[in-house]
Amino acid sequence: MSDSIYSGLTQLGQATPLPQRPEDAVLERVPNPQAGTAYVVRFTAPEFTSLCPMTGQPDFAHLVIDYVPGDWLVESKSLKLFLGSFRNHGAFHEDCTVTIAKRIAELLDPQWLRIGGYWYPRGGIPIDVFYQTGPVPQGVWLPDQGVPPYRGRG
Image 1 (tube, rainbow, N blue to C red):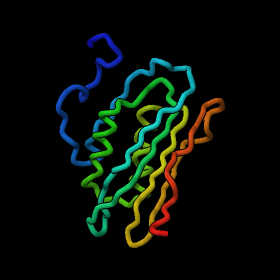
Image 2: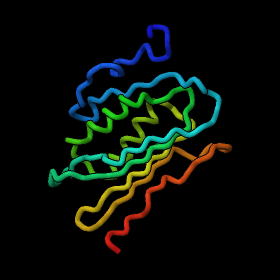
Image 3: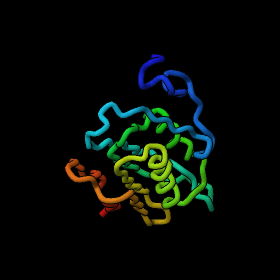
């Protein structure tokens, strides 16, 4: 694997502990073998968790991350560990969602990125947070994120 595009990865293929904080998580990238082709990559994390910074109670979200890669792809195990590092992290929904998007965008410098953070209700109010880096590039097929608005029991 030494001369492959995967040779610089430090977490894939071995036991890697869950980082205690998002700041400690190592996001890794690999060269995009289809660089120059506009296509969408989607990651869905339906069981994302973090903590309320005021009460310490758990918060739950369904995250959908879409990006049009440039020269780099995010390595999925490192993304999983990064997202898992929020499990014991106290931050408001808006901060968690935008922090995730900005960290991925900084690592990859994608043509485009968006995140939908669909947070489950606490105190009777669901909070949905959306962020994107700019307009969708022309010529890419971008499916709906597929998460219905919260309707409760109605």
